[in-house]
Amino acid sequence: MVTTETETRKLSYIQAVNEALRQEMERDPAVFIMGEDIAGGAGREDQGIIDSWGGPMRLTKGLIKQFGKERVRDTPISEAGFIGAGVGAAATGLRPVVELMYVSFFGVCSDQITNNAAKMHYMFGGKIKLPLTIMTGMGAGLATAAQHSETLYSIFTHFPGLKCAVPSDAYTGKGIMTTSIRDDDPVIIFQNRQLMGLPASTHVPEDPYTLPIGKARITREGSDVTLVGIGFTSYLNNQAADLLAAEGISADVVDLLWTSPLDEEAILDSVQKTRKVVIVDEDYPRCSLATDISALVAEQGFDYLDAPPKRVSPPHTSVPYSQPLEAAYMPTAEKVVEAVREVMA
Image (cartoon, rainbow, N blue to C red):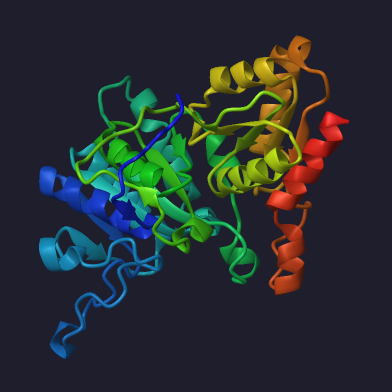
């Protein structure tokens, strides 16, 4: 379905997610948040420091003042410890929201995520629920070097038992956060830091709302080529669609929103309409979502295609720290346009 918001209550991505967290904590006393520096004043109350950070992305700013440090918990620098605590809390009936500061840090707590959170409901024969939400920062473009700039949703998408969400703007950021907290399965929300730096330009309803799990959206309808995006690359695809329109090329823009479950129907329906597809992905190119979607289209939509699927991804190398190299590394709207010209030819 095409999103046609006409109202004018505009929030930034950070404001929208913060509002979702606040509303869900007000609605359900079982919801609490923990992570590194999510308040930023732990142990310094005697100095008048209670809420100095609000997390590295400022997503939790102000919440400790309303809900107190029992429900907004600064943790030690031990991802294995606090992700594991989140798994245990969820298994006993709470609804923890745990912030893994950067997705690149997953290696420290991969056992807690992929061996515990992903498998417990299945291995216990469905006798427990695991309503755990993990939110994590990702994405290049801010000169924070290789260990703080990766986009690794493909790794988690690989594991059954994990739901993986990738919001693309403030509206989907709030809706997906609300959906994830209320869901009874573990959900990982991958939040691109470039989206957090964009000005408030997206309408966000004030009342709480949810978005359907595993459903993509069409942000722009077109007839000549399908552009598939994930998170920030959906933003780039909308920019590319404007550039292509000036050349007389009509782009159908699919914003995935979820990598697991994946909305295969939305992708294939669009490809059947346009007969050409460009998949834009900021993750590493080997074993990536772009590769998986390309295989999906080739296997199930081959008869629709007038040209092979085209991927726009970074090179297979670590994210550079150098700003000129990082700019060359990342997908851009201009690279998307060039890829479309190739498939149109």
